[in-house]
Amino acid sequence: MPADNTNGNNGLYDVTILGAGPTGLFGAFYAGMREMSCKIIDALPEAGGQLTVLYPEKLIYDVPGFPKILAADLVKEQMEQIDRWKPKLCLDERATKLYHVEDHWVIETQRAKHHTKTVVVCAGVGAFSPKKIGIEHVDNYPGEGVHYFVKEKAIFRGKRLLIVGGGDSAVDWALNLKDYAKHITLIHRRDQFRAHPSSVAELKESPVEIKLFYELKDVHGDGQIIGATIFNNQTKQDEQIEVDDVLLNLGFNADMGPIRDWGFETVGRRYIKTNIRQETNLPGVYAAGDIAATEGVEPLNLIVMGYAQATVAVNYAYTYINPGAKAFPGHSSEKTL
Image (tube, rainbow, N blue to C red; front, side, top):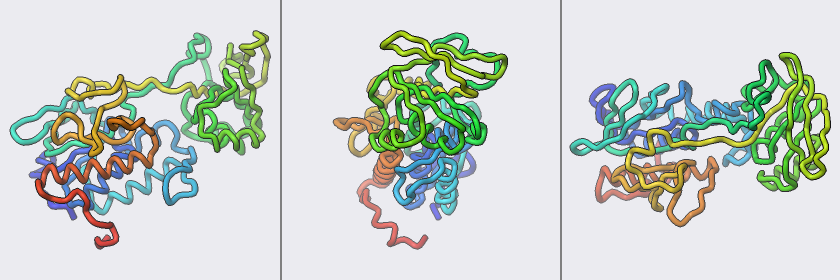
C-alpha cells in the first residue's frame, strides 16, 4: 500500500493525474506499483473518459490481453486494477489553474486546491465536441433520429440506419451495429477510408451497404426521421432512401481549454510537447496519451500508446521525487499483488 503522506484530503500527494481515461487509470495503477500516493482529477462525473462518454458499448480490439472488450468493461477492469492502491478519485472537478508554490505544484479546480509533488497530464483530446455537418435542419433536427454518439446499441435494433463518415468511428460502428440494425447504409464523400485497413476489409465483406462519393443533403420526418436525401458528389444526382436513424461520425473538435494557459510548450492546438521521458517544459510535470506529442515521434493516438507513456511518465516522476532512484521499478512479477 502506498505510504499515506497526503496530510488529509487535500494534502501533498506524490503524483496527481489529470484525466481518468484509460491512460490516466493505468498511470494511477503504476503509481501504486511505485508506492506513490496518487490522486486522479477529472472534469467528468464518471471515470473512463471517451470510453464512457462516447462509446461505452463499442467493442475495442487493440487492447493487449483482450481479443475484444466493450469500452465500458475495459473501464470496469481498469477501475478494479487500481482499487488495491486506493488512489484518491476526484470526479466532476475541472482543473482551471496550475502553478508552483515553494517546492510543489498546486492544481485549482472549481472545488478545491490540490497540492502535489508531480503532475501527469492525461487529458486526452481535452474538451471535445462533435463536428456538425453544417446543414441547419440536420444539426438542429426538431425530433429524434439524429445521433453523434452511441450510448446504447439497443436503440438501433431492427432499425434502418444511415451512417455518415469514413473514419474509424464510422467504420467501427457499422461493424458493431450490423447485428442490431435491420439494414445499414454507410455513405462516404470519398473513395478512400481513414479507418484501420483491417476494419475496412471487414466492412467490405459485411452486409453493410457502402455508397462512396455520397453525402447527406437532408433528413425527413415529423419528429421522427423516416428518410434522408443523399447526393452523389460526382454526378450531382440526389437519391431518396428510407431510414429511421442517422449516425453522424464526422470527427471531433478538440481544445485543451484552460491547460493551454498553463505555460506548456505545445504542438498546434491539441498537443503538449514532451521528450522521450514524457517530461514537459515544466519541471515535475509530465504528459501522456492523446494529449502528448513526443519530440521526433508522430503521435499515435492508441490506448496501448497511452499505457506505455503513462508508465514512462510515472516512473520518471518517481525519480524526480527521489533523485538517484532508478526509473525501472523491476518486473511486476517481483511484487506481491
